[in-house]
Image 1 (cartoon, rainbow, N blue to C red):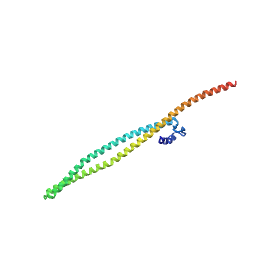
Image 2: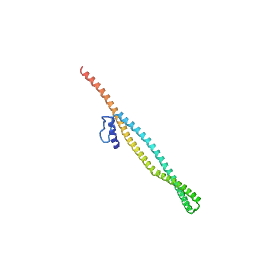
Image 3: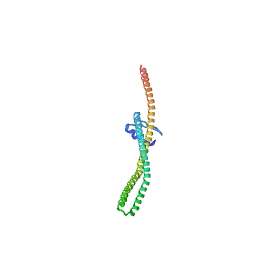
Image 4: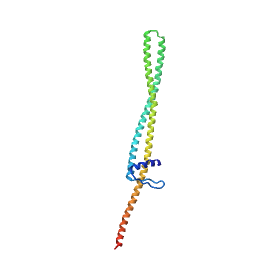
Length: 201
């Protein structure tokens, strides 16, 4: 609540030139009711925007989490495939050493180039997926942090709203009491004028 007050004081000064503060321990500050209500409305709208932003951020975080899951699954599928390709490369190398026929040598060489290209493709894809699994968690962390920031702002705003609504309630009570007193004073003034006039006769 103290933090909310620290924020509220400069905010109120922006809206009114001469705020009035109640005195005493635990006193509730009060200002012009229309100003306080304007602040309440502004904070409510800000909270709605922050809540909507948090929903969007959670959705994005969920989507990124799904992408990480997909990337890890794809990697798990590709690693055995890479091993299989490398096994074939070893087999081709062994066979090629024993070949003496030119045609077969050329055929084996062509198969070797094709297999090494496949190895390159699989390896490159695994590296890409690894980057995804390393970078996306950082983005998720940023999103989660922003959600926490939004929630903290909402909580602070709610504290200020409670304070301002207490301000409005207190001021309304004071307004009622003041109007009643003014009515009594007007009546008394009329009575005084009447008695004064009668005393002059």
